Image 1 (spheres, rainbow, N blue to C red):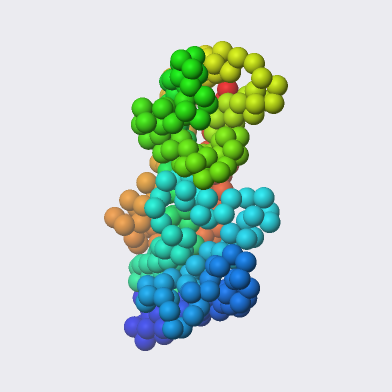
Image 2 (image 1 turned 90 degrees about the vertical axis):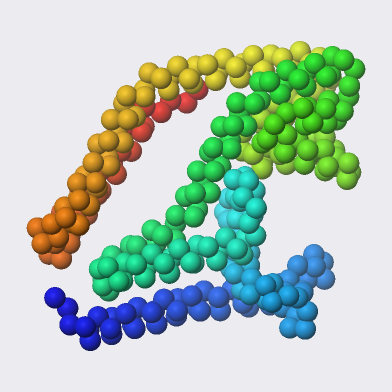
Length: 326
């Protein structure tokens, strides 16, 4: 049993460390943001953020977090990845990048504080903080997968509507506008945005290429490639779209069959993966004295780490076996 004075000292040290990390991250982002504000004559970004005489209080609070988000986005672009704003747009989350960074830091502080109160200052403190920090981005990835599945399910019917519009005499932009007004989200939202871009001067191919990057659908990439080739060489675009629609329908049918055949294996994999954690959680909270040796003893910690690694590898193998690329 730890002495109360030692627990108080540990909490004070942990709080100082957390505040120091937060301040260091903001301070590291400030010089880049200041340079952006000074060089903002070309793009106009950041000038109002760092002007002490202008901007609302909310903007001044958001500005350090936005600087962190901008620096992270620049690094991701250099490595060929997506910026944070593009990640949020793909997940259809109406957050500023600064707001999302604030949410991540709030989860980090909250997870670390809960771990500190429950377990004290130790390895669990770091693991809980990092795990909580990663939770918002995991939710973004979940929203992206869910939206992409809904988008791909709508593609065959959307292509049929687009093909019928072309057969009735519409031009491609007119057919896209008609489809956007007669379909549901998420495909209606993306087509409406592409129509607005075309109305502002972008070509059809440019607006559709941007939509591919926003959505991240391989089927949509195939469609846009066919439209781009058609604009160069000509041909029967309505017939091409009908053929692609038929291919996508067959692919969806095959995926549904594979999902039904592998449902039991996937369920078994998740049961085998989660069961050790559920049993360990029950033992820890129901009989803490019996399970405490696994957390406090060095040998027990090694065994827990080895068990977690083995479970992760086993789950990866199961997911690899039951996932088929169609």
